[in-house]
Length: 217
Image (spheres, rainbow, N blue to C red):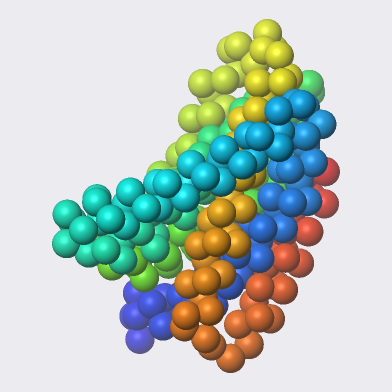
């Protein structure tokens, strides 16, 4: 069986795993860190959540219909949320490297553990949404791999002069976006296509996220 067919047949399991990862990472890492940096965290969390919700409605009712496949939003919305989060991650990593190379190296280890599974999950979800195999690969690569170094390189020159509150604002927006992707987008999609042991995959995603947070800490 080709990898694409295997991916489509198991996309529900990947969605459950991704939901567990994104929800846990948001609540265990992004939300606490953003609230520690900015007093506007709760408002921006809500803003990030609602922004991705509106994007979901826009892609579902307008863009994806015009592209001839309304199911495209299944992959596009997680891709946008993960891409934005990865871009913010790049800013965080540039801060770590500005502290010391050792701190940056430890943070980079967390980046590898964090971004690689996100890229796989994004690729599978894009396939499930009806994208061609090559298109899904490049979109997933862009969202999970390219955005992080772009965020790091674009922020490194000015990161030392920025108020920490700005980063907290962006982290709060990112957390709100990923909470929507995990809890309101992926989990309901998985529940519409129930599979045996799917709940175990959610738990595995949560456990993986705990490991990621521990590694990054």
